[in-house]
Image 1 (tube, rainbow, N blue to C red):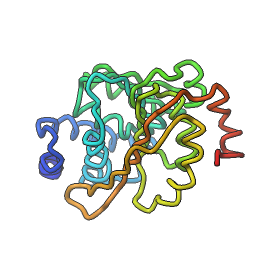
Image 2: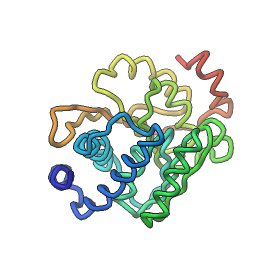
Image 3: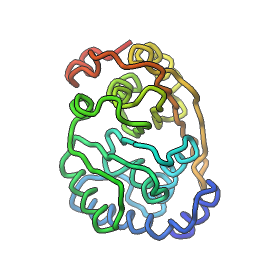
Image 4: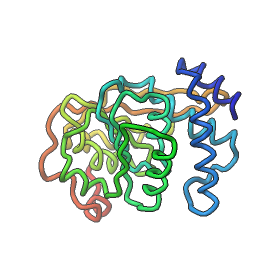
Amino acid sequence: MEEILHEGLAALSLPTDSTAPLMDFAARLLETNKVMNLTAITQPQDVARLHLLDCAALLNMADFSGKRVVDVGTGAGFPGMPLRILKPDFDLTLLDSLGKRIAFLQDTCREMGLERVECVHARAEEFAAVHREQYDIATSRAVAALNVLCELALPLVKVGGQFLAMKSVDSDEEIRTAKSAMAQLGGKIEDIRDYTIPGTHIVHRVVVIRKVKHTPTAFPRTFAKIKKAPLH
C-alpha cells in the first residue's frame, strides 16, 4: 500500500509525506469494518486506489485553502477524510445520517490528531435548515442521483461557492436530467472533469456546480418528499 500511495500522490502532484497518515486511516477503516459495515472494498491495495487516491484527486478540482467545506453523506469518510489528511488548512464538516459512522469518524479524528474537522450526525436536509448557505464548498461521493444530491447539498453552499459531485463517467444522462433541478436550486454546471485513478485504468468524474444565486427557502424539502418527487 505504501508504494501505491506514494506513487499515486506523486502522479496527482500531491504531497507524498501524507502517505503514512493515509495508511493509518486505511488500517483503522479496515479494522473497524470487521465489526461495522463501512466499505465493501477490503483489499488494502484497492482501498489505496479506489478510496484514498480516488478522493485525493478532488484536491485538483478546486481551491480548498481557507474554505469552509461540508462533505454530504460522508459514510466512512469519503471524500472528506483523505482531503483532511492531505490538506489541513480548511475547515471540514463530515455529515452523515448514520450515528455509528459518525462515531467511527469522531474516534478516528481524535486518535489521529486531525484538527479543524467536525463530525455531525444529522440528515442533510435537516442540517441545512440551521446551516443554510454557510459553506464555500460541498462535496459528495454518495450514490444518490445528481438531482437528489443537488437538493441536499446546494442549500448549504454560499452564493459563489461550489458543489463537487463525484460521479461515474457514464453519468451523461443523469447530468442532463439534473440541470433543471440545479437551476431551481441556484446552481449551474461550471465544469465536468474526468480523471484516471493513478495506477489503474479506471476513469471517474467530478461535476463542478457553481452556486450562482440563493436557493429558494422552499428547499430542501423533507427527504420523503425528495425521494417521492425528485426535482426535474
